[in-house]
Length: 503
Image 1: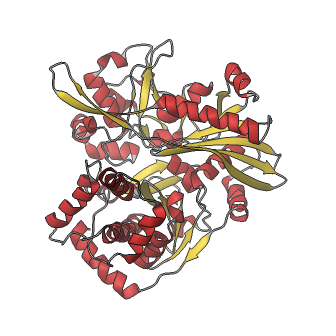
Image 2: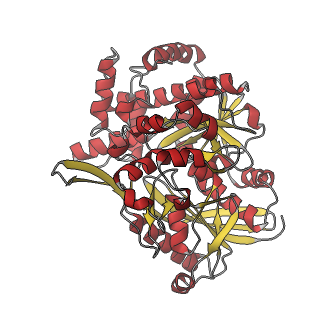
Image 3: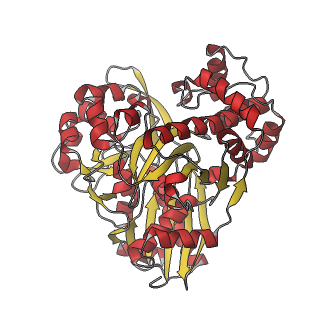
C-alpha cells in the first residue's frame, strides 16, 4: 500500500441507502456504517392530455441527496474532518435530463414504471436484436436505458434538443455534490448503449433510437476523479473539498469486486439482494448466439467482464411482506418471517422467479397463487410455505443459471460466492449449497460498499490493483461456509423446478 486514506462510500439501493466511513491505515482496512435510511418509489395516477389516467412511478432524488448530505454530516460528527474521497454507487438504471442551467427537466422515473412494459419490442424494431447484443453484450430488460431513452425520444422530443444532457442516476448524485457530468464504464455498460469492446457509446444504436450522442455523459474508468466536493457543501458539512471518485457505480459491479474469489474462472458469484445477479468474471465479452439465447449479459467490471444473468431475488419476499403489511395493518419482523419459513412445507410448489407476473404486481401473494394455478400446482396454503417456496425456487434458479453460464463460457463452477445483503440469509445460503451441490462461501454482507471503497483506494493510489483489495477483504471481513446436504432430494426437486420454469 502506498499510503493511508479516509473515504466515504454512499451505497444507494432500490429500497434503501447507507453511508459508510472507510479507513485504509498501515496495510489494513476498516469500514463502518454511519447513516442508514429507507426509501420507496411513489406511484401516481394522473390524467394525460386526453384525460386518460396513466400510472407513473418516480424516485425522490431530493430525499436521496438529502440523506447523502446527512451521511457526510454524520461522518464529520463521528469520524472527524479528515476526508480524502467520496464515492457513490446506485442501482443500475434510471436517470434524468437537465438543461443548460442545470435545472432537472422532470422527475426521476423508477425502472418499474409501466411505460416501459413494451419498449423492448420498440427498440428491436429500430435495431436488429442480434446486432444490439453483438455490440453491447446486454440482454433485453424493460428497464434498460436504451428503452427509456427511446421512450423519451418518442414522447418527450424536447429533451433531445441542444444543451440538454442526460444524467444517469449515479451521475446525478455525484453532480449534486460538485462533480462533472460523467459516468463510469460499469454503469454505462448496462445501458445497452455502450460498445462492450470499445467502452464507448455506440453511435449506431443511439442514431437508430433518435438519441443525439451529445446528450450522453462522458464515460470514464472506475477510479477516475470526476470533481471535488463543492465549496459551499464542504463548508456546510464541515469537511474538506474531498475528491469525488467515479467508483464502480453500478452496485453489482462494486459487489462483484468485493467477492473474495481465489479462482475467477471456477467461481459462480451471486450478488444477493432485491435482485440476484448470478454470474462469473471473464476476461472478454462473449456475444455468441448461444449467449444471447441464454439471455446472459456482459456487464463491465474492473479489468474484467461480469458474465451474468439478472434474477429477481428477495424482491418477491419484500413484496409479500408489503402485501401482508397492507392486509394486517402491521409489518412482520424479518425474524418472524424466518421462523414461518422454517416451519413451511418443503418443495410444496415451484416458481419461476423471473416470470413477468412477478415483476411489479399489485399484490405478490395473489401473483404467486395465480402462477401456481397456471402451472398446475396447488398454491401454498400458509405464509411459511409460500416463503419457503420462494427461497427454494431462488436456489434452484441459481443452479439453472449456473449451468447455462458454464455451458456458454466453457468454465465449470467449483464453488459459489454469495455477497451482499442476501448473504445474511442462512437458509437461502444453505438452500443454494444444496441446490447447486457446491460449497458456498457467504460474505461480505456489505459487499457493495466494500467494493465502492476499494475502487476509491485504487483511484487514490492506496492500492495498486484489485488483487491487493482481495487480501484486505479476506482479512477484514468474516466469510461463512456452507456445504451441500440432501443432494438426492434437491436433485429430484430440480427436475420438477425445470418442468415448471421451462428450463
